[in-house]
Length: 252
Figure 1 (tube, rainbow, N blue to C red):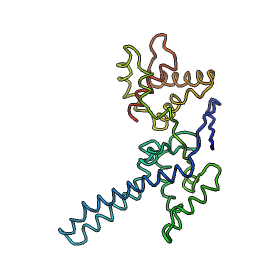
Figure 2 (figure 1 turned 30 degrees about the vertical axis):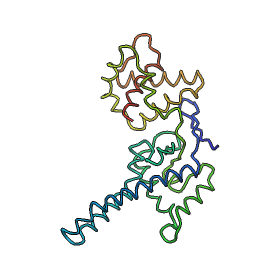
Figure 3 (figure 1 turned 120 degrees about the vertical axis):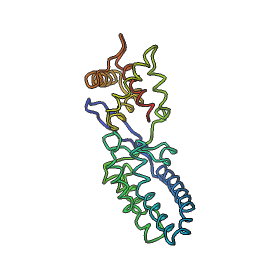
Figure 4 (figure 1 turned 60 degrees about the horizontal axis):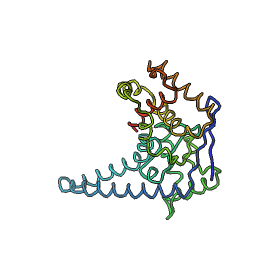
């Protein structure tokens, strides 16, 4: 088992389990199958256009292929917090080396370099020969696209999968209305900030008690100062942050 450790600004370590080549390959097979289905469906829907004007259906099909090829992976990885349908099915996702969610730029870069990783796929009957070779030689299974974008593929923690568990733990008696009204203000958080807060809440059991209390106090203080969100009377920092994370988790 390969581990990747990230040290936060508060000197607290978070550990991620690096995804192996087998898991990544299975995720790719699922995505490739879905891409093939989408392309086939698009071809069936667009081919009748040739009856209206010769060549129109073929041109539309080519555009559809171009859109699928260059948008499927980066769009899903950006919007789904580092996951494509294949990665989600296998339970892995892409993160930055420092442990946070990837940006659209990183998702685009790692998938543009996918064309280099796929060599000599274009010329001979192979599949990601170069990318597989580079990843197999790297201690954390990073292909060229990961090198270029500064990313890493890791397993999603099994505890973190049911995100709605945050809502159950975060709900308090008579308090949910207050935090539903905070949804608009929480929408000002960046995607990276949202993912960091969710990761903290979902992985809190891995932290030492002192580190856990310090981190939740820092996040609670951030919410109070930046968004003027106040905890209920006698409410702990962790309970306060969990309730806000439940609002964020409901949107993921």
